[in-house]
Image (tube, rainbow over all chains, first blue to last red; front, side):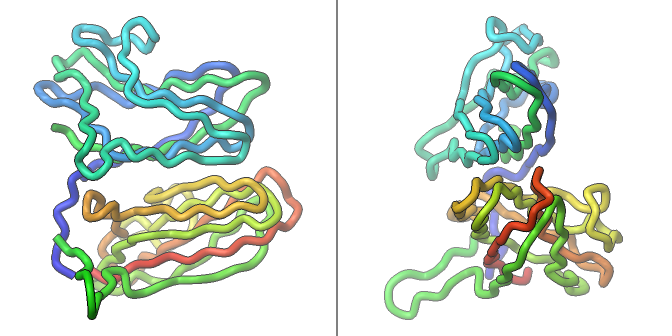
Length: 127
Length: 134
């Protein structure tokens, strides 16, 4: 096969635990760049969770609903995972704000009840 | 960009498959083999089945120069969690939008499928991974 030229050449992975709410800080949006979302896999290992992909509004940096814009969401049942196609063969361009050194991007996870574990993989590019 | 040709004489891009089945308790590392020296594996698609209990599946190649199946010595390139009696097919190629590869082999690195569960009782699984050498 010939060499591919992947569009989404960066990946971020991780895991965490939560009771009712967790904000996962994916880091600062690079100055002068946007986060271009490609694909995400979101895992709820042991209880039902709702996942939200959020990024700060320009000039904001806190992981709060008021300071972030919602780009995508999904729920995963106990022991299930959800694959999100955020690109749709070029039909969708989900882009964060341009980073000024302040803004971060986040996963906001919500659930009910006892502690549970989540995992994630997000494929993206800095655009 | 590598793409399969269409119509008569179609050729697949990911021409090699790794398949297997067995039972898993809390954790199982399946050694998919050594990454050939000077090459890397390019992973296209993965299909996982969890037949009778909740199972998580992680596809994890070794980091460069590492050879053991442990979290710290591998990187996560694909993941899925399946409820009992379900299967999932992961598209790790997306028509060329993704390039999901292992590290370049130095003769040491393997690639692994890690299965995990909250339950120690044995549950059955199946997998098929389509890939090619790059």
